[in-house]
Image (cartoon, rainbow, N blue to C red):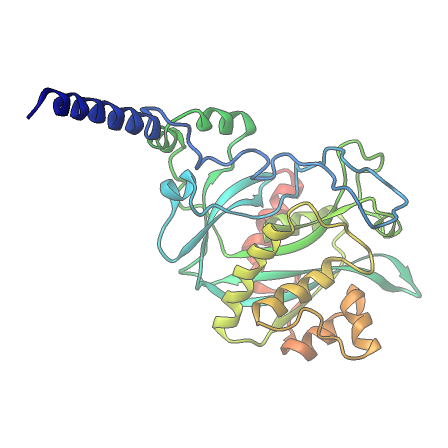
Length: 343
């Protein structure tokens, strides 16, 4: 080989090596670790471009200490550490006042209950307001599995500076025997950190004071809230759907929660807990989101207190025991009671 050819080969080898080093550095930044904002540890109240709102907390930091949207952890270091075939790994299941990473079976739903949580005020001794949500009862052999707490913002920053393998090793060991058989998807109003009231209000819900967050929460946690609020009655309507439909509704609820994130304004009438339930079920079943064909059905989809009949009409089902009477909630009820009494 001639001297000039050797020189060209030598230069080509060095150029290839240089490109390889640029493309695969020894300690590359781990792009599989989500940012705090990706997991909704932080976030601001959205700006309203075309809506005239009375209260305008736009751009202010949201209080995300209790309510956060679901985040699918597919493709992250968390999936590599905690993932399992046949399960969807998600962040932000709220249980015992903490946020958890949860492994949810994709074919584990036994039953779905449409719940109506009544609250004051009353007129002529009858409640005129309610909060609605979807309760999911899982099969005993396929419960929701809690695997770890959601990392703090500080921990996420530390993980992001590590290589993928280092980040995986730095994650805590999986928790064992931490399972939930009753969980809920609940669309709720959320305020900013410096909100003067720091509580829900029917009136303020029409004035632009809140965003709506679709949260994933344990029934024990919801039951504790019921004790704290005076044990108001909670009605349950069990949906009459195939197992395939029931599982689709749970998986779609995660998708809707993450898609909505913290960018949707809450409205007491137009965009509330009940309209979101109808949206989730219709999307899961491949239907148009708005199935209302009459003024009456249109109203029932928007007023929680009147929505049970429309759920039954559109999706099938029957009323069963109340929350307080349901034996399948005995474990959640007693755990919540002990916490409420400080035992």
